[in-house]
Length: 260
Image (cartoon, rainbow, N blue to C red; front, side, top):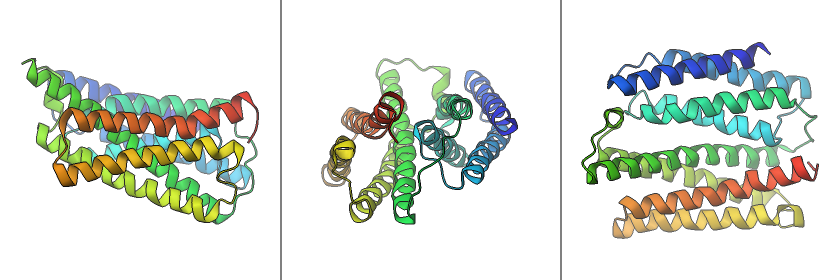
């Protein structure tokens, strides 16, 4: 219970410090201290559960918590070099919520998985986390463009990098996430023998559709310089499909149909 309380508390402290910094237009980095403590406690929570269960837990709330942990880690890492404080205002409370949900829901006995299947699962979770951060960057890019078009220069805009830098960061994050997603799909094709069986076919088809949208967007960026509203729309649509592919199907299987 201690890691959960520590993670939730320090995530919320980090988010509060970010909100205060954004409101005041300050460029401080003191929020990184509680954020780092929260990350350690959050990771500790999972390590304890895996030690007691004898294997990594990849159930619905465990997967949500792991994705949130990776998103929080990526946000903290990016925050050391880029002014993207506004993302932490969203990511840290989400990480606190999902860590608490994972702790309260309990830790069911994880099924046995080969290292190949574990590799597929870890690559997928890292891809979801990276692309979720890209989706938040896309949303911030849209808000920034809209505010500048309407000449509404809000205080929170000072917490963001210039428009061109934010767009460049978006596509760099998309590229990394796309490569991770490609590796996860490849590992699934190679190592998951029942990838197209009934209980996985929706996940597989939707994941491939999301991959295709991301691939088209990145190719369009390279070939025709796609940017702005088009990049935002494609990113958000592809991410929505990807979330539906994994967490939507896993929610139905585990929490409604009670199947692992």
